[in-house]
Image 1 (cartoon, protein in one colour):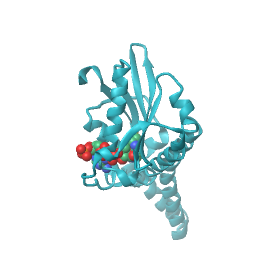
Image 2 (image 1 turned 120 degrees about the vertical axis):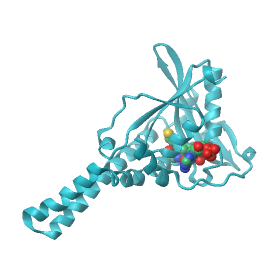
Image 3 (image 1 turned 30 degrees about the vertical axis):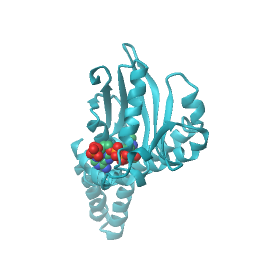
Image 4 (image 1 turned 180 degrees about the vertical axis):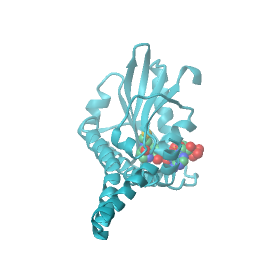
Length: 243
Ligand SMILES: CC(C)(COP(=O)(O)OP(=O)(O)OC[C@H]1O[C@@H](n2cnc3c(N)ncnc32)[C@H](O)[C@@H]1OP(=O)(O)O)[C@@H](O)C(=O)NCCC(=O)NCCS
């Protein structure tokens, strides 16, 4: 897991920008109909950016080296063909590229086809659901959503769709969105804010850790992501203990 986090850091997070912009220029507000396209675009690009880091992460896994080695050596040993060996090597690289690509593209397609298709209807017309955007000079630069997460003994809010435009990162926008959501959960008398993410989404993992979220067990598992050494992570922020 640690490996996954470190691998993701360089690639998903990018360099942290120097803070210094006037945060008051960023306005958090409820979603409105004219934000639909921007919110969808942010979500799609936020998903796609994890594809390459998944592949680079895969290349650091011993089991994937082994697969590559077998792919290269087997045709060489069996047919004595360097061309076949190289083709097999390329085939293995494609196989290692696919899990991240398929997972994040599926996630993007599904989001846009389900909840982000009609955000107003899905999030603003249902009890316990909500969707916020961050606006800068009329442009939507961040989003976050809340859905109810009811368990037998608790009333929780689940954080979804945390996305910040790559041009506006490192300025505290995600923190602002998280705090908006935590305040919302507190006002609704919830016990906690919960979420799940993957270990390759290092900037998200760092964000939640920084804000005091604790990691939790999750039974989510994706065999294809598992193949390239990426796991699901659960996070929880206790409202009662946060004062
Ligand atoms: C995760 C994401 C929302 C962070 O947005 P952001 O506005 O840049 O985050 P903030 O500036 O509010 O940073 C808050 C904290 O998060 C952590 N963090 C955010 N990006 C980081 C990065 N690239 N590397 C390391 N830590 C990072 C830091 O602890 C930071 O606090 P600090 O600046 O005081 O050290 C953004 O990178 C993003 O949209 N990523 C793609 C989509 C995604 O992965 N979403 C998370 C889904 S769970």
